[in-house]
Image 1 (cartoon, rainbow, N blue to C red):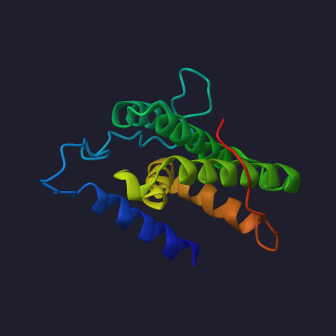
Image 2 (image 1 turned 30 degrees about the vertical axis):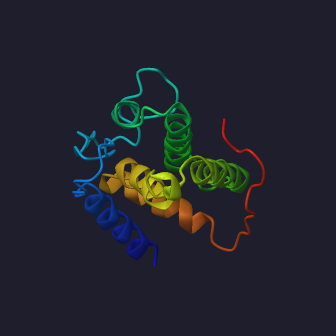
Length: 163
């Protein structure tokens, strides 16, 4: 099931790069496929030591000039990266990583409003997930995290969850 969700996310991500709306003067984020790190490490490069891979951080900064959107996506990228690095045997750490991810996704949905000529928040969130889990090792870590969540209950965050 998770594999199907991930494959669907990757397909959606690839299709979003094919936006050919000639009536729009707005820069379409993701119109240029990013050069992603394909190393075997779960985080590879993070020169600023902020918990976000440099390649993903650079992509967000270059493609999302709106400060609130950029910050929401950086929060999401950091949350997804934390998921890959969490000790899946530590139930409390898994719960906290899941909560951090839920807060980041909630923030994205509060900042991106598809009715106001911005990208669909679901697609934007999936794009960050797809870019972060772009190698076999990273995808396996993500799937192991989701397996560790089996049988747990989560609640939707409320209020302003943007950092």
